[in-house]
Length: 400
Ligand code: PLP
Image 1 (cartoon, protein in one colour):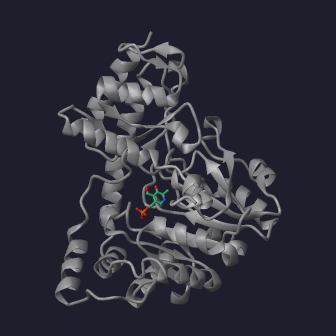
Image 2 (cartoon, protein in one colour):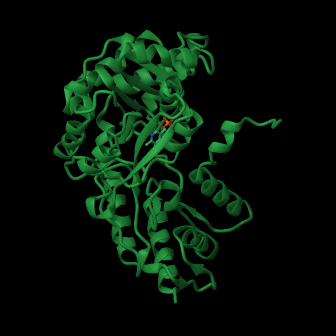
Image 3 (cartoon, protein in one colour):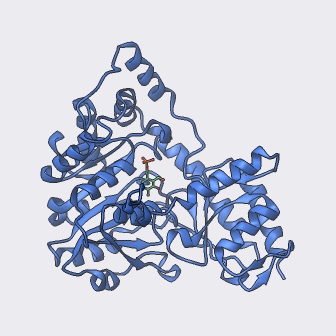
């Protein structure tokens, strides 16, 4: 009898965390490494949010809370959904968890039965397929290719739906490509979903506030109100408010689902950190003007990185609508040999050689379900990004 659970064998470790760890180890050995692997803003959490957390500690708000969130935060989330997304939720339709990841995890654990299918557009955030597998479900991958801006088509979505489809996971702007669906592009998908009433929609809106060049963010239940009763609208404070370590994510959805998610959370982690919840109240109700300032800083970095990568022989990099990632293709580098003598036959080989020979850590595309690409997180200081692009260019120029 195996000591470890069989379900563990269905899950692989996160390649993003693996690259970040390797970069950390190389740095510890004294190597000069630029890490472009981690998906978190380098900005600090705003002072008013920190102050709210300190005030919560001093006021003794340091005890258990209701398992899926304090009433004040649930109300702030209802107000946010109405203000920014035109979605009307009651506090009884809101859940708060330890990060967006736990929200997604709870929803899948609460609903999946063996053999249930979950449609996931590729390239995808690495955790979606693994959480689905952990829950006993089967990921069904629908590829969005570079030619369509990494977005899936209505036809491809329609073709993937079967009587066993339980969820469609949607993520815009996307990790890892930064691709954002405009209203008409999303409407084409929601039209398909309206024809299949057994399919639920899990929309991961984590990068809502990171959108550039006038791109207007939209979410499925807003574009198609007919989907409201079978949509879980997931969001969080991690990315927009530079609060990755505080661990607060949330969602709005039908009470039946929210109640089931509460049950999972009540028997696993109980409430998210009480202090972080009070900080999140301040994040959602306090000043929002810094969002636009930070967004502009990210847009500048995106332009710097896209230009820098497109100057590298063998690399082509599309300009994404949002998030803080780009997803360049290395098709033009495959079949070559690096200056250090490494055969570049896959995107993984490209990324390994780049790290070993030039000290730049990026994540290979195979981990996100679409090769030959790699993901760059540009949530890093401009001088680091400039130097990274210089090194990537030198690496590419050295390929024979
Ligand atoms: N969803 C996407 C698309 C992400 O990129 C991430 C974090 O990288 C998450 C969810 C998880 O966010 P959190 O840190 O709030 O758990």
